Image (cartoon, rainbow, N blue to C red; front, side):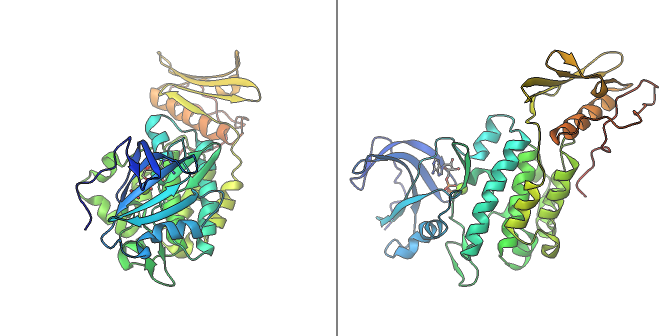
Length: 370
Ligand SMILES: Nc1ncnc2c1ncn2[C@@H]1O[C@H](COP(=O)(O)OP(=O)(O)O)[C@@H](O)[C@H]1O
Ligand SMILES: [Mg+2]
């Protein structure tokens, strides 16, 4: 019988093999600890999952699926044991934590978020060729190794053509409407979840916060596949990215990217040029061709936006405005445009209501997702 009060403790030796160093995290199903596999002298991450039927190796489907999907962008499995009411999965130890942790720690530049999701789409493409659908694609299940993102947590996988699954549960908030309404699971569901993951990362949205705190309206969004529409886009996201996200998160599976590969290829074509970091509500910085660039909102009688490249003001991107709102909209447009590498102002600069002149950039106003 599983001992429900049992918890792995630092300093403990498990299976006469794993010395427990410290907890790394936990999710719905398991706890993960940093351990040292003493007989081979290897640091590892050990996931312990309590199971009701530990007498069969079927209990370790999660490990089998993760091993079946071995890939550069999937967290590597070293081994698994089924013992004393628990499945123990030994994995490569990834020091960088998850993309979910990164979002909690501070601003994640768009270029980094897109790169991580592209890499995870490689992993999903590979899993799908193995007949595996992940069903839990989200920032907390994307581990950040040195310069490499890796898909982890195969604890809710399903192999639709055999019906093999670990559990009937799946990650509701990123689930496609065909999964929520009719229990239909396919690679297209993972495309949808990867789209919502990227939307959350691009918006720098670590948790669901107020989105799901809204008298249950989100339940209708889940059924209609309109969570992305509810979340909306931050106004500084480039238009080309928004077009891609709309397609990835389309409630109609027939209108979505037809595969993880097609979604990834669309992101490859995006060619982001600047790694903007939002320092505060009033300032963004990045490094571009060896210079530090900065965009600042400056309050005053005529709210202004300043664009500095090194110590030089780049006049075509600066402007003064009649209202704070207009100035901030301009700052968002400058970030969106220059993220894509465009720096040329539109031919006819915009004039605002008060007649002060703002620099124009060549995109239209940031729009909403619908
Ligand atoms: N290989 C690993 N290296 C380092 N930390 C990990 C590793 N795997 C998981 N973690 C940490 O443990 C957390 C929970 O692991 P996960 O496999 O997602 O469990 P669950 O199925 O309970 O969600 C992750 O969000 C991450 O913070
Ligand atoms: Mg998890």
